[in-house]
Amino acid sequence: MAVDHYENFPVASILLPRRLRPAVEAIYAFARSADDIADEGDARPEERLAALGAYDAALDAIAAGTPPQDPLFARLAAVVAAYRLDLQPLRNLLSAFRQDVTTVRYADFAALLDYCRRSADPVGRLMLALYGVADPLSLRQSDAVCSALQLINFWQDVAIDIEKGRIYLPLDDLQRFGVGEADIRAGRRGPAWTALMRFEVERARALMLEGAPLATRLPGRVGWELRMVVQGGLRILEAIERVDYDVFARRPKLGRLDWLAVGWRAIKM
Image (tube, rainbow, N blue to C red; front, side, top):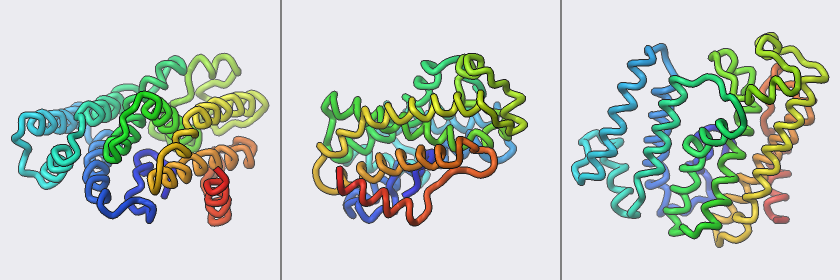
């Protein structure tokens, strides 16, 4: 299971109960396809926003009990009905995707976390809903884990995102540490870049550890699933550290030995 944007869905994980796989796949298909509308291809911004508007309209139709005949939305409607899912997390995802079309810089960490609240946290909340978990503590800890995963993805993908014209590192942090946008475009490393990335890595780690107790409290497969997600995210942060924060030369990711370490750490949790 990849620790990556919207690949956080455990679609193919052997830990996911078979009975939940169709529901997870239906939610994943909605999120993945809408995310692709915002990010992929060469459509103009207004075309992307119009297509995402059609997804909003489909959610309205599902809420009204008259879902579109499109198989993607028909499957989603069946899942929403079967599990009595709140549509707001799905609407929040669409809000984040629209923001991806129009926003390419974030002034501060609060603005970035607000984006994570809509781009990542709904994933965890939907998964908890499938398991029937809705207590406030679990929701808060799930949000922390999902936001941490989103931040980790951003720190992995600095070089990829700048090619798309995007910088997710908060602008006030860039100024604080003396890193300019030109430095990022040039892949320029140095003491300032190292200090900035060390700060951001620790920030993501703290958020992940804040939510980690949820993994040991949830029973059965969902608990093991979340343990792997938590440890996978933490391991990627270590991978970024191992390359001395050089995310320009190649994207830090996990290899086979890393996943063995992740599994062992999940057991130790």
